[in-house]
Image 1 (cartoon, rainbow, N blue to C red):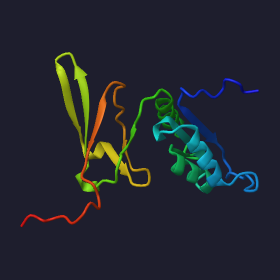
Image 2 (image 1 turned 120 degrees about the vertical axis):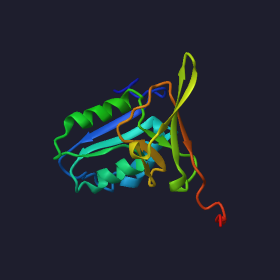
Image 3 (image 1 turned 90 degrees about the vertical axis):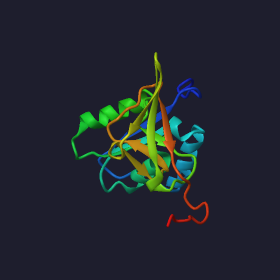
Image 4 (image 1 turned 30 degrees about the horizontal axis):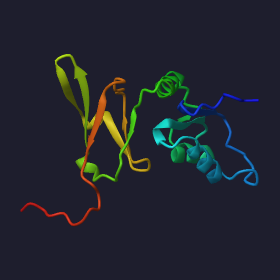
Length: 169
């Protein structure tokens, strides 16, 4: 029935809108089986999102959002303009979240954006109040900033737990 619906060359963004907790029977598929299956649809975390406009007590939905990657919005908050803007940015391929390849020493994180201009590459330092670090997802998330599509986001950091650190005396 859905031939051609799933395209391997497209990103995958799912949005659940519900005012109740997920009630899928674990005998059909457990939450973690679903998460494993969904993760397997696209190999890279930035190629897939699972978002929820859900109740605050929606633990199963929130777990799926956290594990797969996406944004959870409280359905009772009523901030539909914010919700739709962020979901639209995701669907358009404009990213506000960038995954780190290794675990950082959080205080060492420096974020900048490189933008190619006719006069050359310009590096823009992004202040610490314009981004947050999500340890669960090992990702930098911009608060309001949306880098241009051709910008390069540079994440510079020291690795956590790479051995003893010598203090300067």
